[in-house]
Image (cartoon, rainbow, N blue to C red; front, side):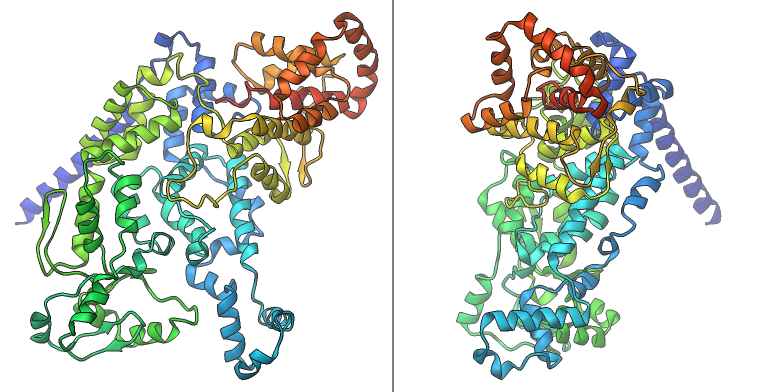
Amino acid sequence: MKIKFFNITLTTVALTLLSSFSFHAATNSKFPYREAGLTERQAAAHLISRFTFGATPGQVDEVVSMGLEKWFARELKGEMEENEVNEHLKNYDALTLTNAQVVMQFPRGPLVQKMAIADGALNKDSLSKLDKPEIKARLKEYKKQKGLRDEKELFTQLIGQKIMRAVYGKNQLHEVLTDFWFNHFNVSITKGQCAQFIPAYERDVIRPNVTSNFFDLLIATAQSPAMLLYLDNASSMGEPENIEARANRQPRVRVTRRGIIQRMPVPNRPPQQKKRNAQGLNENYAREIMELHTLGVDGGYTQQDVTEAARVLTGWTVYPLKDGNFENLRKKLDEVGENRLTSQGFVHKGDFLFVPNRHDAKEKNVLGKKFSAGGGYQDGVELLKMLATHPSTAKFISTKLAVRFVSDNPPASLVEKMADTFLKHHGDIKKVLMTMVSAPEFWSAEALRSKTKSPFEYAVSAARVLNADIANPAPFNQWITRMGQQLYSYAAPTGFPDRGQYWINTGSLLNRMNFGLAITSGRINGVKIDLANLNNHHEPESAEAALPVYAKLILPERDLEPTLKRLMPIVATPDVYGKVDKAAIHNTNVVDTLYAHHKLTNRKKQVEKNQQNTHSQFGDNTMLAQVVGIIIGSPEFQRR
């Protein structure tokens, strides 16, 4: 018996080592960029553009020195110390709170009033005699006395940490993947019921699983309060199990819709009660988990499959938090004890709770898989496993990853390779990414700089390449919102679209040019830029001389000739800020407007005049800020 156990152990260790060796060997295989006609430096720039939020000064040299394959392997591990990020976030105290602590420290409006009444700060009977401003003033004073905080502060910290991690994070691929998977499993602060749980959702559910197994990520999101409330599965109830079977059991713990606990056998319900429970089924989450999270809209499921999946997932809800409404329920659950709950079919994991008496225990059939009558929590787990490993899921997830990291319309051949890896390795995200970056399609000319940056990506990439010092991310975020992306606020479960046509229009281009000019000229509060330091304080003699120097720094390893030709007539334009504003008023393309201005002037005289005025203005960086701002606002910088 011991020998057998020892052999099994050796086999397990051998398989683990073999798996580790295989992955190590894969990450050390040579990327096929030379076959695509790229130099090592061009390939390094391409890797940076895809797997970070933008190049920092000297990063291409760093990647080439380390070796492209080793750099990518390090990024996949994501184990570098984040001292700089931690220093920036040291005052973001709300980011470490549990969901229960958030609820108590950042109570929403109705709960504050209940708490004030319970503590005697407000008299319930006299509320009707007070006007709204007076009630509001008393509640404000009550919150101050109790040390309660506004929910707005929680979201400010949430958004601030996202910006700081993207700008200063060492583990850039993990930051990019956190953004990608959050968007894939989107929840929104616009839905108040789930909003408070989003910081912990990103911190504890998304971020730790970005390169793990897809099933781990799927089930973690399914059991998060943020997702359970966002897509309403927390309130979904099925028709209970057979009444006669239940009546023959010993008395059990029962949690009703209102949170009442009963320990007596449940009597036969009248027909209208059964109807009410049947109407309690909510299909929102079941529909979105198939359409958006796993199989895709063309994944081969039917409406009947959605309904059956919703029935399988009934009883999956949120463990009562200390939020006033469910305080008594939580206390009673605690009194019953974990052992008693478990013996009665309850499952409690952190903030997740499976309630058996709210589960539809009848037979179901999803995508041809039969779930026998009498099942419970485990049926939901099996459903998620089936969806996570389905061929349609492999194709859908591989397509989304390829759209994010390759192009808006990735080659079918690449998606097929990635999907094959997904199925062969049971949804191993690392291996799928490795297959992608090792494929010739990733390095093709069609893929290079084919993606358009979202406003968030655009702003963060500017901050990174300019080596910005961001003391306060709030004004920086206002620009991201102004350019069309309100972080954590996309209301639809689809998440922000990941195709360029969604982000680019005349208005957005104007805002981007304005942002470029604002960040380089120091007009964004809380953000400092040292432009001269980017070029080791070597001062160009004119705007025309500065353009190619700074374009090379900001757009590394690119063919700059077309960009320089387009921007050269613009960089020395007098009052470029005013002309950008004029373009905004007339809703025209800012680059075309500025370019047209110079086509109508005597270019030789204009250059001579500008060169005379430029040298004196470099002392306070005025002209340099204009040159670099125009580069940041150019179409070429907006590509990745």
